[in-house]
Length: 117
Image (cartoon, rainbow, N blue to C red; front, top):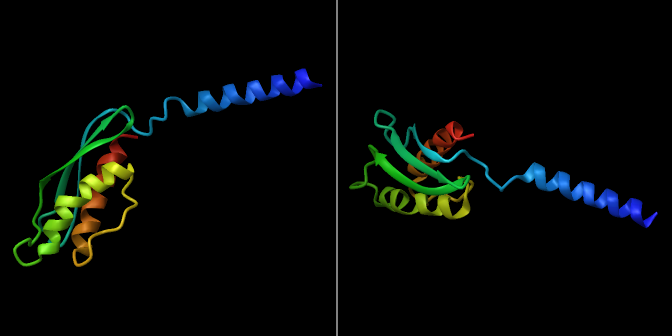
């Protein structure tokens, strides 16, 4: 009976390891995405780099955000890419006072990552 349980546990472990692979969520590469922020006429464009199946870098390539009128928008542009990479997900809080900019950054990253699946 113990041999049967050990064999079952070994088979379950092997199946789990095979299903998990190396933990990669995305295909390695560089991807771009864009989404509207505060100014829908000038969307936020990002470049997302994936290495070893995980987010490794996010760069804001272009945006039409009014950083001179809304300083919080610059805070979002400066801090959210790093926070997304650190968490490995766009499921993070936005910057208070820059709701549309924050949403645009997260949506642009999601658009880029949809290419990496």
